[in-house]
Every structure is written in C-alpha cells, then in structure tokens.
Image 1 (cartoon, one colour):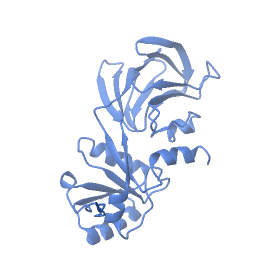
Image 2: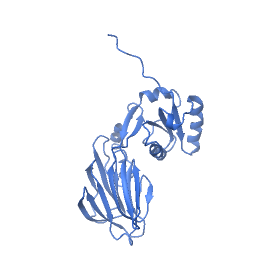
Image 3: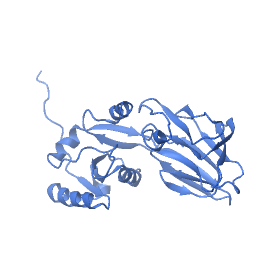
Length: 262
C-alpha cells in the first residue's frame, strides 16, 4: 500500500490581530495584504502580532472560541511568540505544534462584600497596596496550611506562567505536563525562608487577608485588579482550553526546559 503523502490542507481563513505598537501595526498591514484578513469569529487560526502581553490579551479575547492562536514576536520578550517571518506563513501554521493550556479561575471578595471573577493564563497574584506588609492566611482544599504569611504578596502560577512573575519572585519553573501549580511567596518576611509550594493542579488555594482594613491587598488575575481584597480563591479551570501554536522544535515544553539553563 502506498503511504498517503498528501500534505494537510493549509488554513484559508486567517485572522490577524496586533498590538498598538508601530512595529506590530506595520506587520498587520503587510500580512493582511499578503494573506487576506478574516473576522476573528470566522477564522481557522488567529495570528497575534506583538509581545507576550498582547498574546495574553488575545487568548483571553478568544477563550470561548475553539480556535488556535499563533503568535509572532513584534514586542520585547516574546516567550509565548514565534519568530517573525512573513514568508510561507500558511505552511508554518500547518506544521506548528499545539499546546493546550488551562487557565486559573479566581474568585475574590473585597471588604465591601462585592465578589469578582477572573481567569488568568499566567498567574493570580495578591500584592500589598499600602505601606505595610500584607498578612495572608493560606488554605489548600479547605485545610489551613499557613496561619500567617507576612509578605509583599503571594501568587499561584500555571506551568505556562511559571517563567513570568513567578520566576522573578524566585518560584520554580514548572514543566507543562507536570499537572502541578506553583504557589510562591513574594518578598516573604515571616516565615523568612518560605519560598512556596508545588500543589496538584486540582487544588483549590484560598488566601484570607488578615487585618485587611489596615493592611490593604490587591488581587489580580493576569493584571485584572481587584482592590481591597478580603479573600480570594484560586483553582485551575479545566473547562477552558487555550490552544497555542509553536514552530516545530520550539514548543512550550522545550521553552520551559531551555529557560532553566539560560
């Protein structure tokens, strides 16, 4: 039997989106003219032009659409982005490797009793918003694990986000298929040497703010802020799947491993 060597069909409906940066806007104009422009809700694939921040915006924008996102770096760091090359884009999209990421779901309540919900691809963070250190009580799956963490803040990061704020706060880089979340302290004062924990992906983490009126805290899901937080719960959200495309040999697993040797 002759093997089927017919290449997979190339995407015909590509939606290009770009950040407001001049470099990204120039790329948007050139690529749209060359490959056409499809509305986001009718596209087979979305090409995001910008940096990591814009990639996160794009993933949030399409989180209810079953469509993959391929990023090309027109920003700065570009950890979630591919190299910017204009030629032969449809073939690159066909051969790209796909990574599936589940975001974190945050539910937070402020001191006025108002509740807020948010999704985070990288991390949910709690940060002091006044001159005094925050005091946080930490529970995991309903069991108190730390009665008082005196710190500038704390965060829960996904594997995909473990190289971002989490890594800057000296948290661990987590392999994409590990099935764990990183809980990391930000500038801890007491316990002074506590750097955090690795938790099962299904864990529910709750932060209660101690003395919230005098020591105000802000919670954020991928930079979506909630001020004057009284408590916040964080869990993985398996019902939302973000599909990210990477050039072969440069997938998210490889990038996370490579980052540990940089």
